[in-house]
Length: 214
Image (cartoon, rainbow, N blue to C red; front, side, top):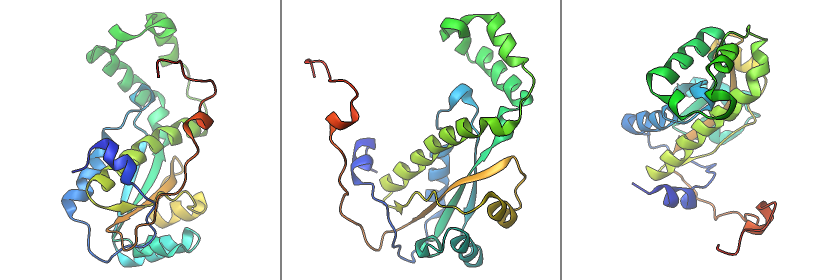
C-alpha cells in the first residue's frame, strides 16, 4: 500500500475505468477512511450511498450531466451531508464526548470557558440550512480521505461536483430534505491514467514569503 505522500503524488482524476469489480474489502476500507476523517466539533456530517447496480448508475449518469465514466465505474460513492448533525440533539451528544474523552482539558480561549460552551450548547436550533457550508466543507475532508485511500489501494477515482439538482438526487435516492448530495466519487481500476496536470508554484499559493530557514 502506498504511503500518504506517494498517494498524493500518484492520484489522478480518472475518467476511464475497466470493468473489473472493486473488491468488497476495498470498498469497506475506503468508507472506513471517510469515517475516521476530522470535522469541526466532531460533527461528522458525512453520509454515503454505495452504488453498484447498473440501472442505478445509468440514472445517476443522466442526472450528473451525462458523464459516461460515472456509469462505467464499477462502484460510485454518493457523498452527502446530513444537516441534522448540527441539530441540538447532536450538539448535546458531541458536547458530552468532549467531556468523556478529555477534549475540554485541551481547549483554550473562549472555548475553555464552561459558561461559553454552555451558551453554545443551549442556543436554539436555527434553520439547519445555515450549516450547509460547514457541513459540505467537513464532508469534503472525508471525501479526500476516500480519494487518497483509493489511490493507495491501486484504484482510480474522480471527484465529481456536477451532481444535478437537490430535487433530482433526493428523488433518486429517496433522501429527506436535510440530506443533500454534494459530490459523487466513481471508483475503479483505471483504463487510462492521464499525465499529471500542472499545478501553480509554491510561491503562488503563499500570501507572504516563507522565512529564510526554509
